Length: 99
Image (spheres, one colour):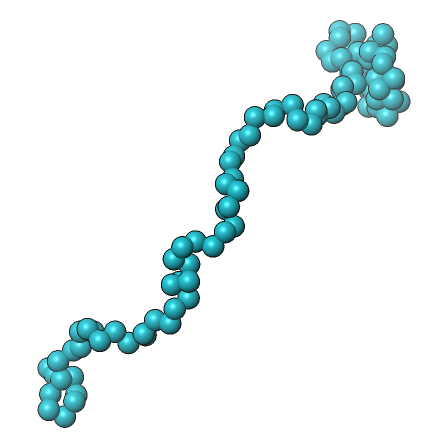
């Protein structure tokens, strides 16, 4: 275990980090009293096991992309002008009434 004061830690931080990464424990002290311990993080990524959770989270039918029974009617031409449209009242000249 290495103990250094704050001033020395500031000037040799890169070296202290390298020591910590190598497995050494570094203690930083203020007025000769330990205040911080510098240790390396365990950054080893967790290994994933394929197929560990084998239960399906979603279900898709075998015929999910088959045409639906009424799908053809979706593409039929629709009359853009409905015949039962309500219109505003007009006078004899065809101008809007009341204005």
